[in-house]
Length: 181
Image 1: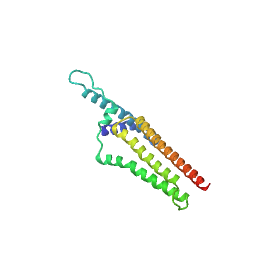
Image 2 (image 1 turned 90 degrees about the vertical axis):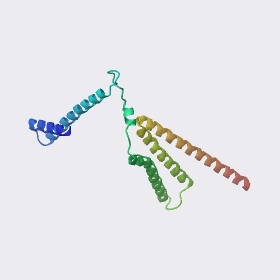
Image 3 (image 1 turned 45 degrees about the horizontal axis):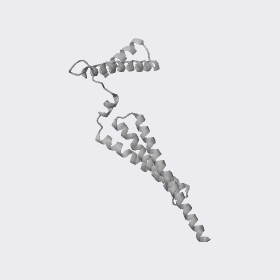
């Protein structure tokens, strides 16, 4: 196929007598047309070969089924499995460095530690909730929906923790003021 496309392309460009930018544009147009026709003929041959033996009823194919049936290399799967962890570690390290710079090398406050912890958890989970649907061959909106759900769950956990710390701090303040009186 590539040899035939290239031969057809060069013949058409020579026939038109174009050169320079126009020739490159013409080559691109002709090549895209050639690829489309080859792809259409390939799809027709695949559809013809996937008819059932009982009759001439073609077997239905869906894009999701084709994607789910694709094989993933073990190395690629390992990279996909480690990528969210690596990104989360980079996020945590950069957040820690940022807060240390803001605090002028003093330790992080409880609020900053909490933000770093829950932010890292959100990034870590969001990475996996985006990768898993892609590996399983599900549509992109499923991954976006799962990621949104994950981030909202982490945010809810963060807010609960903030409320608990606020209640604990107010209880400590009340006990302290009661002792002073």
